[in-house]
Image (cartoon, rainbow, N blue to C red):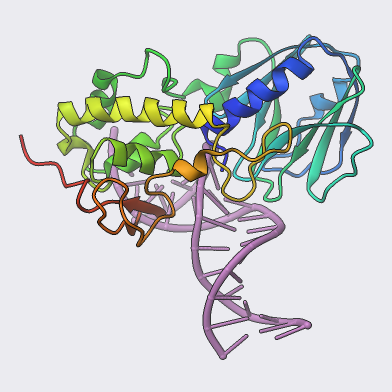
Length: 275
DNA sequence: AAAACTACCTGAGTGC
DNA sequence: TGCACTCAGGTAGTTT
């Protein structure tokens, strides 16, 4: 599932191949994604791609007249291809470049989007209310503590909220809580400050490690060159129900929290004790 | 305000 | 072999 490491892996993979290139043609084969593909996409031919940036899980394709906001949803991937490479089912958008290559957007579940923004990106409705980037200074133990104060919601839900911190989806929320030795169902407001500090460190650590491995490929995600990400092999709890905890050997448990599959070690991740 | 829940979509997997 | 069913999940939007 594309979470922050998968989006960052994609950004790093495509940036050298598309930055500075001019769009020669665009082929939108399926307009019906999460929202209809923005009409402005049709004005891309002739324009130069200035940069590929990322905000949260959005890829920002900067072009001369504005910015394309690409979200990979749950099953999307962007791939660089030779035009001769045959199209696969669910290849919805082709961006043909002036270097003889093309960027292909593949998304079986069509939960992604290709939207358009002009001017100041941060004021776009989808980006305006986003919290800090997890790997930047704005995400800190005090900031997380402020977000948790008085909240009864499970800590896992809170770190998955985009207003609190962006980019943490179900996989990395599970992994980070395990690294921080914190029970995922603990009410956010009851988690001691020291445990929140550990959690901030764990979130950063797991995201950085995954980026280094090219992200996590569970089912659909592929890198820009068609290769899978290799972080799956290093997952400590996600989709490991019944298997031994790599730390203590206890069986990993699976429960549902906030309608999401949640994995944790009952030995290593105790309920926080009152302070 | 916060929490709970729904919709969107397809492929993979399961049970009969 | 095939049909019916369930599940996975990011996130905006709605309801409680």
